[in-house]
Image (cartoon, rainbow, N blue to C red; front, side, top):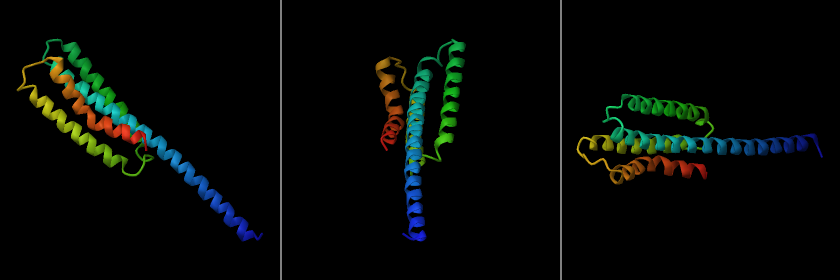
Amino acid sequence: MTDSTTQARELLEAAAAADQSGAAVARQGSRAIAAVEISIGVLVALFLLAAVYIFPSDNIVAVILSIVGYTVGIIVTVFVYNRFRVSAGYGATRRYLVALSISMGLFAVGVASTFLITITTLWVWVPFAIIVAAPLVITGLREARR
């Protein structure tokens, strides 16, 4: 074999190894983005339930703790998102933003509905909270399988 043939094989092997490494990094990034999407969905749903059940109460400590818990949860998940978004697969950020927009739109409808719907039973608000979380959770589960 000539030196150029050996060199070409080494380059092809290096390219194949880099491709496998890149795919592994993309899988890891997709899993992290999936965890972020599911976490944000659950946090938004829980915050909607807090808006229905905790915020109208006179318990200021519970109100403050729910706001602080939501804020810390969002900060942690956004930190994780920023850490892994570059390594996520193609289109992951766009899919996340679409799901987030839908969930936040539903959240806004839910908060606005608290002024119109005076019923605070669980059978009304828990299903609605699940609907609010659904776009992000579904997108996260699909992202985890990529």
